[in-house]
Length: 566
Image (cartoon, rainbow, N blue to C red; front, side):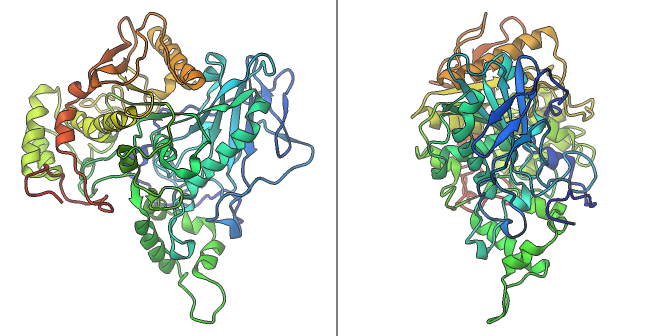
């Protein structure tokens, strides 16, 4: 099998909850590529591309933004795409990057030759001023996902934006570390930066303004945006940022979902990836050669069939973004709190019930059947004093089921309150706008069955169908969708989200009471005090702030000042 052929080998299935972790639940199917009356042609910096017309908008899919990172170029920074002669057909998406299945059993799929992007642009190019550009980084826990899973036609038509969706290397192909690499270079982030440089060079050719580029993403895509906010190498590549359910401080207490899981942090010191890479090379028979021998361990690894690397174990092992690197010198949450980030306006928010879909996928294996099981969970994830404090603030009797109580506290501890902490840090320096998606009847585009004791509500990724075309929405939800598209695209155009018809203006984040709650129906869009509603004083006072490099610990979270701090 060559490096560019799709991989079709069996592998152990990831647990569903981990696959969904930061996975952008609710992604839309790929855009249609039916014939149009006249196919548009755009001349890019590397050659002409032939797109497809869809009436009010055009699409250009499978456009290479970098050369294939295959063979000897595996684990190297992206190089410019080669030029081509004639007109390249951009009527269908390019190959997806090698990845694990999003749900259920099955082996890896995709190709290493995957550095493609897709452009959706209003059809009326060349008339009037240039339009804002929005660059979308998909979710998927850094182990799955693709740009063509998202249909941004409504952002283009209703919001007048040029939208670019991007593939980037995943898992062991994008986040590998090894001494011969000089560390863990974060190739996934480097790919995204190469795509942003492509946008800077080519946006105007599609009617977009290269001086008004917004990076936005959800889940792992939101974490990517966070990384670009603090990466020196991303300076000047974007002018606004939208972080959806993936703040720099996203975390998860130990044993939240399954008994054997430690504390989750998406960013890890690069030494961890280097140690894992050294062990991986040895396990694959690629050790450092003896003195005087030719070749290196890295040469050996680059010659391996991609199927040997794309195992469930290795894709999961290399799914954290490394810091202490040239692209990401500092742990992002610490950089934000110190004010070391790019001075651009930011929108940041979460969904009200983030963790429900994750908890729901593990209840069969790790049930919370009654109050005793709920108390046991508290005692496994927190030290004794913290467990008592959390249990008092989230009494099981205040919720219809113990699973809902557990999901509520995890949503607040893992997503909502960390995002609000980061928002407060950002707001000290730049215009910042905070939201909470709160449609408890949002459609479930994941296809996962609900358990009766845990309806998904406004779970992780459930805001995506309101921005991207995927599933039908009821009339009040369509109105909310139009309002959200208006907010997102006005922010991309001006750096201010403005207001929606019949709703209050979205004001800058100046206090915890200025969070915009997004729900359908009369009064559904309103400002709320999210910090109070979600008990953030509890989590802020008891927030674990371990020494750098201790993410992933398996012990319980501790109360600050109890003598059990790490």
